[in-house]
Length: 420
Image: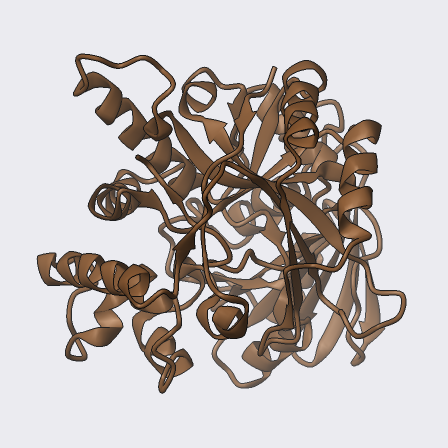
């Protein structure tokens, strides 16, 4: 069963929270971050991407950057931009992609600490591979700040009683409530009722058999590994130290929004357009849908854009295995039957002929990149489901690269967890 615990969070004052809360470190590069927080000294990007305060061209992994991280993080606390709660609390963080709509969909996550041991023992389950270099970068950030500056995004199988408690809290006015520059809404509540906190902790311990990393695999690995380091280096370790836990936002699985993650390819592997379309007919029923954008509407349906036309592709029976957690995935079908077999792309992680486009950019981005000559063909996929992710994680499998795109992304800086 799952362990969560309350913590004494560091939070910004209400009057600067909108300026301080930032997008995650890994969704924008150094120059984009520099532009995004120009004229805004409050942005947490000064802590999560501190190279923006050093000369342009500074290597983001250089020792100077990590020194700047420490300097900036200390300054944020000294200036009163991050203030520590006096008692351990849980929090609720809500997000919406269309917050001004009267019928807007919101997703409500509990902000709590998860146990590093649960990660090591696979009670916290992953569905992606991690890279050692990225893990080490985030581990350095945790070590030098002694904090989980950014949360990780977890999911859990929905529990009715937890939903009831969350609904009761969120019926009250939030502490923070703002719409970010990207149009996404963010709300935040503090749970300080000790009986309510104890009940939520107990519910996770008795009703939630596992938690699933939705977004933030490298941050999760880094936080858990630093916790293990501190454990090994502490002769008086008891298991109750704050470093045994790391900060998460945990959403019920039935509220999450997973969008498509699409592909564009630079060439047809020596084939003409006609030869390529004929090759598709072997495994797919292909239909010309004309020049208007076509979006796949169900599992095992794809859309291809080439030479100004959209084509609907339905995988033929027998070309996939719905009983296999990996074989059922549309990314697997496309990779095996098109990218590998027809276009000769063997490794999605290393082949320079392929690129990936998050569905948040819209399918118009696919046609734009083909029409301008940068790419030759584009593929739109139906998004994976949360149940598919759970099935893969539960069976110890790993998703193919660039499969899931969760939106909205968590804002960093609404609360920070320190390891002591």
